[in-house]
Length: 499
Image (cartoon, rainbow, N blue to C red; front, side, top):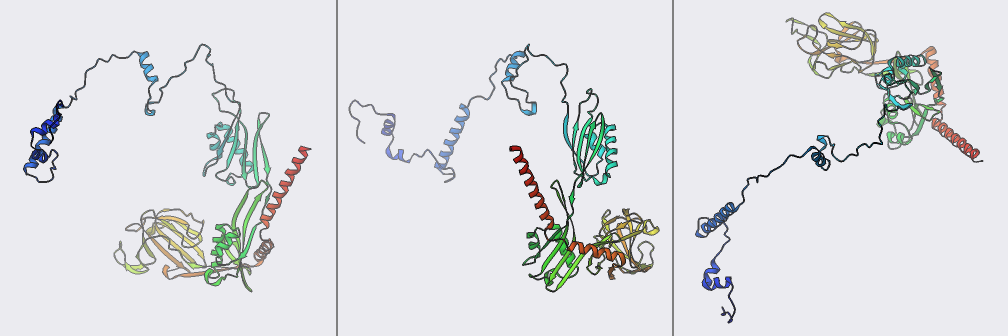
């Protein structure tokens, strides 16, 4: 190492190096890896260095004790000033911030003025009462009852559908302690009828406005192609009508095997159009399929309260097995067995189906209830007559829904599973009776065929002929013609106004 020049003062580091041998300075390692050479002299030196550094930090750290200070409570005016400049969370009311105080120019009102009339809308809910809807809108109970009676004289309340929107106008009241009187009410009571109630010379007057409705059914025809469903949808048929069509045609043939791509589908759907522009699409009433020279025509017709599909010849057919009345586990079949309560062998005249208490029980087939009530060891018991000498019986119900003499459809709920009568647990005892004799329900698959005759057959053929006279798309064409006429009328009115 060269000696310093004369007059130069050596630095501290250089002076330290001059006193410590070079070999020692090179071997001095202040940063030691404590994860290596554990227990060696180097490791202990590093551990000691770390301990000295940590101790020095702890000893030189400042105190954590709070510094006492004199805080004087603020006066009320000072506190209000501080609050005005603060931010209070909404959870505490959020009422901070400066507010403009009233000046001498502000005069308090003796009473706030009311609006001369209030316009609002009310919606009739499912299972709701007409008068209750008016009372919730602010109409006095007596006036709501009067309006409900007035409306019921014009149209049955059952004809007013849930979801009907009423436009209500409430007038001026003499004071705040009484409800506002009704000035006007207007709503669509039926598809073909609008009702308006107005106050004339202090009394309510009802005005019925008839709405012209075109009942031309919607007929849709087209080629089946690769998919009957997609072709029908492309032709404008509603999805629900297509599903009903497939079910109806499926009772006469296989949709997948018997209907080719060159076949022509033909369906007629109930369709209504009001002069105000609204439309309603109802049920499928006609289903036809043309396969070359073979043609199938089916018309929906009601017989005995049940809708069936009848062929053009007036022959209807309803086929299929009885439905299983409840979802459950079969615990006892038809035949001799040891009775679980009486303890001896006896004939078991039905099926025992175990299910949870309260499970719905459904009618196995459509028919008329000829017994509903308590029946000795059967407990709560329902028996249904299906015609042609066939009856079904349902026992041990917890609760009966179907009433005696009522008409039920296949799959309709008639009661709920229970354990009434001679029963060891919740289950359904299901019986099938044919010509007065109880048989095994699992062995019966029946077919019923209905044939129309006389005046009923003549009326059926007339209805079918009238439907087949409807041109495809006639209902839509009439709508377009009406819309074109309305546009032309509006144009003429505009031209007259300009001239």
